Image (cartoon, rainbow, N blue to C red; front, side, top):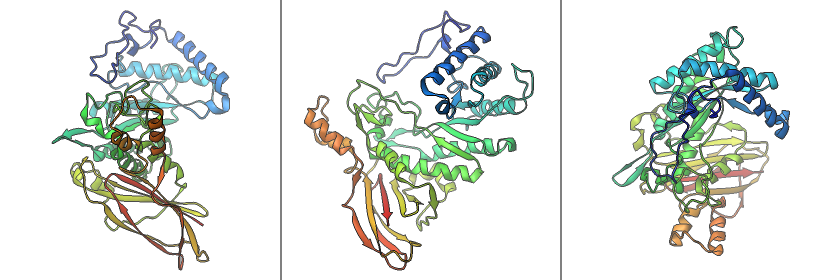
Length: 429
């Protein structure tokens, strides 16, 4: 909330983030309601007009407009009712300028918590059947429901331990809440922050539990959780529009400082290559049977941290088949590779051979962090070293592309997948 509009202008000290060092309590007038809702609407009016002028109506109409970040905790110091009032005024201002604007929220923190679930349900109830504070009529437009979901990391016996089960359970609970309202059938659901932990701006220098962020463990975690979010949504019959990672570019920070970022000083991290692999998947998902796979219910249990998760997802296009495979463990410990026999059936019967492309992310592939460590972890690398890091950061082939013979529409491949590795097997014909 701008200082000129907040009900507490005298308490306007922006939060200080000191390069990932521990932060003090936040006390700021920026987290309070406005003293004048008419002026707030005028601000929203000017803001969306600016966006329309800069980006165009077609582009802006595709955006999702959200009022506030995590209003159920310290970022909102008004009451729940004051938040709902502000939401009504915000929607009214946006829709007056752009009737097609898609509005929603409330992007609360993990909805497994009592206060978070209460806030989310109160927001939904208000939008569906509450009295609109601007029009006096029943209900307020809501075009999507958003909430945040995190896992949780800690250090155990000197090693990082992640918590994929908690991450998936939180998304499961959020989807269950949305599914409990028949009026929301088909509404887009957005996991506005979907990450292994809560603090992106906390470096591993001061928070050693965040050391997973630089290497391949973040890649396998991301593959396993992002793919299974679709299964969680399908379990409840909700329309999962997407999930976002809360990552920024923390400029002018040390190399591989351990912030939750996709790159460091312009060199992408291994996790970025997981998203590159996602971009190569086709839209149509096909059945993948894993003889050693675990059920979604098992993977969401607290004790699942002991599970060695080796699984995958398959997709196909008109003349392509892509299979993403991962080998993840919540503990940052070494372990043996897993041998996988990938059997593909149902390829076109007249096809005699296919082009095999195999991308890999692991300790030694698509991984600039390992190369940086082998250089001696320089904080002032030469330009030759920087170029080498950029090359190592590219999505890498495990082997040269080759042609593989198939028979009767079937193909069998043997793959060795190290711990904390991700592979993309792509067939083209």
